[in-house]
Amino acid sequence: MTTYYTDDHEWITVDGEFATIGITDHAQTQLGDLVFVELPETGREVEQGDDAVVVESVKAASDVFAPISGEITEVNGALSENPALVNSSAQGEGWLIKMKIKDAAELEKLLDKDAYDALIA
Amino acid sequence: MGDLKTTPLNLLHLDAGAKMGAYAGYSMPLFYPLGLIKEHLHTRKSAGLFDISHMLHLEVSGNEAANLIERACPLAASTQPIGSCNYTFFLNEEAGIIDDLIVTRLGSDRYLIVANAGCAEKDRAHIEAIAQDFDAEVKAVPRGFIALQGPLAKAVLADQNFSVSQMAFMSGIEPKPDWFISRSGYTGEDGFEIAMPTDKAEEFTQKLLADDRVELIGLGARDSLRLEAGLSLYGQDLDETITPHEAGLIWAISKPLRSGGKFIGAPALEAKLASGRSRKRIGLITREKMPVRAGAKLFDADDNEIGLVTSGGFGPTFNGPVAIGMINADADNFPLVAQVRAKNIPMEIHKFPFVPHQYKR
Image (tube, rainbow over all chains, first blue to last red; front, top):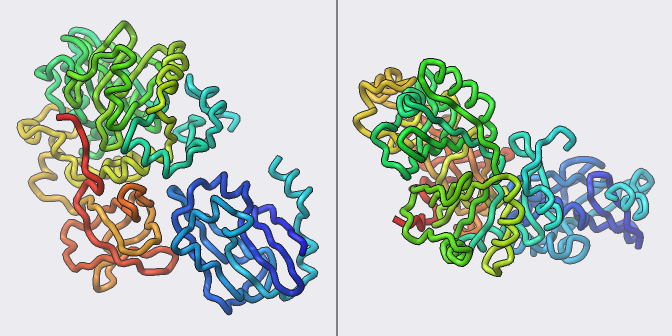
């Protein structure tokens, strides 16, 4: 499994043709306490860069973009009861969606951990 | 954030690990590592300390200080008791709100105006223009300014040898030269606002923070606290096109001043009170979990657009979304629906405040 990052502060962990996606720990510290996560319908097809999820802090709503194109296969239902999971475990239990990757070549446009760490340094 | 001004507590915020953001031209703490929700809840149960040094302090003094205030504000300044704080406004000729303010009478010919940071420039121009007709001086006083809010605020200050327990809500005193304390705030809780010389601000704030009952609270929780308390925010819920009547704030203008007043905007206010308001400010809640925020359009049961959400978000104490809206005064075809990202959220009208006030009367 390899994890990639976007400069919009999403992470994507790839396992074969499937991927798990969320926002980075850095992103959650910038947003502050989340109170609502609007998750998409499963089965929806998205293009790389499309709005996929909306995370809402007390103060503001922020879009989360699809890091790759593909089909949304699963959403993290636990977030409807407990959106704060994104704050406590942004890169673990607070994952947002799972996708079936349409075009693995798109992953090459993403950042590796070192590049992302440099971005937020 | 190169061009932003900083408050005398800037280093303290950075040391405390605050997430800073721009507000009204200042770099201000939005939230601290404790987090907005815990900051909010802490204020409601203990004592929250807010840096509000960005706010504008204007001292008005001179023989005709009372007359100047009575021209600028719908307020009976000449009969205002010394030590009394009054919520009032600067109005334009159409009775629209230029800013909402607190005016405290400090002495027989001395008043303090505390105004919004975002309005500082236009407020100063406005009152300085009026001052030309009066034998009175208007002076901006840069100071450190903090709010200590919550049920334990009084006890915390008492331990710093400030005898505040006898102070009534909306009263203010000068405990020593260049200091000012009022029992007031913007959270719905009992609490105090304390102004001091800028070079004393950090030391005094550190003393308060050494008390375990006190936590630093950012602007984020300041907003969620005032929203739950049903208090308007200038620039969102109030602007120059909105009259005090439309804003639900006519209580701040005493009955004798509502007709025949001599303040700027008095004739327009009187006429608009007689003809009735065309829109009104309301509180809104929803059973949905999705917060409804400023800018969301409001529709009646027949899908007619009847207004706008002016402030909205999640209320941590209310434990759900709360919002303030402005709707057509004759709207009566309920339930209302708010549109958020093309979704229709059913809304219910809720009386202000959303969380009961705890003011010390």
